[in-house]
Length: 576
Image (tube, rainbow, N blue to C red; front, side, top):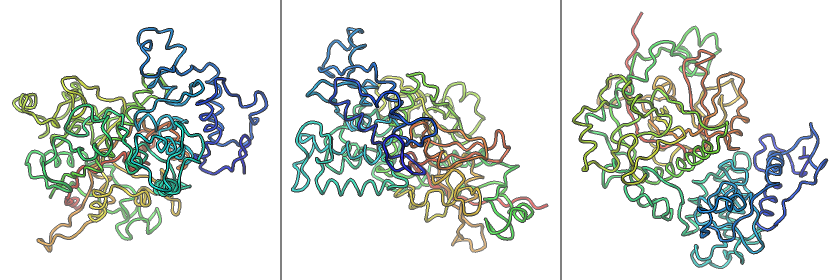
């Protein structure tokens, strides 16, 4: 089946055929006259199948009739701040329509793109937060045209001439091979999408000198201008202030207070009743090895509680830098939605594992957005070993405090010195992910794999795959994550309880899609996220369906940072 507007082949998960929109974007760099898709009758009638790109292009076409022209003085224009009537007629770098390529440029002029973030958003013509394969190629052409921002090109990798190439002719063989390899790593034809993190790291491997261009709060100890460093410099310096100096990888937590905090987290997020699901399995046959009736009749027992045996902090600079980039991009999008007054603006949602007092652990910067970090929320939080004493609070506000150990509302890390930083307009959570020890170690080193995501998540039915599609599944309660944990015997105690592993992750949920029904279309859900409507999925089958647990699903692994590896034992359930 083909699109009735552009003639391109339609796919079941149509997300990448952005031809008309790209043609519109290319036009935006040259033409002084608004384009048209042919007037009445040019766009297919109702009922005719149309690809997502043509549908988006039609919506854009309706918005650009009265588009602004780009000011030829760009960022150097002095009238941008002094003459409101000037800004009504002319767009400047940083304006939303300018970054989206929806402005008219005079002949011989093109966008001023001075950071990786500006390049990315300019070529993200759909405004979805991801580049299609065609978008990715255009952005690559722009980067390769910046000879002053790249090392000297080798034979076969020469950038095209001109300041703003319009066709694929600017890509040499080496660049094309690199582009194709990156697209394949991003998921290829079926799952392919290039996030800002993937785009920025790919550009860094090319050797680009362009700065990142995002405010990277809490990314590392340093000045607030680190977002304008090159990505290579940022990766080298990306270490939060609360990390142990001189150590990398998994670092054992020995501080009694931090261990008490983590134990309290396990206690508080355990659900004592109505806590069995099919993923816990059948006591006779295990998980998904018998019928529903047998599993319900012979339910595998749920532990009475959990005892923390060991904890390790994951000090992985590379994964932390990628997470901070993803978080900054998502929070930027959330703030822009709020600023534009969109109905799709993010709703701040707290989880059991993220609200006070769990929004701050181990001296790390507090969670952003929906974690519930605030004076009222903290005052209402239950007493726990995480609540600082008055003397601790006074010490935390002293000048000798570590830069990473800042409180709610403070300037944290790179958020700026001496200023109160806003808590963010999107959601950031701490969530659990249970698995085997070997899998957890691999995730701490390399993060989650797109090839394996969702392989152990809730099943909608035999042979149908994960309930919410292929993504990383995380839980707000240890009881849910424990369903997927794999025990191992303890060598020192032959007859002792087995030890299980679970990851405690930082997760940027941004603007989540909340699902409260069992009528779920996994492809449509994932499409809503990759089309920019949402950043994650919150499977809430508790509020209406009265199921035991909520789950969070993430489709971009850079939105997750495996922060702690927890080893624990189960407290057997009471007999009788």
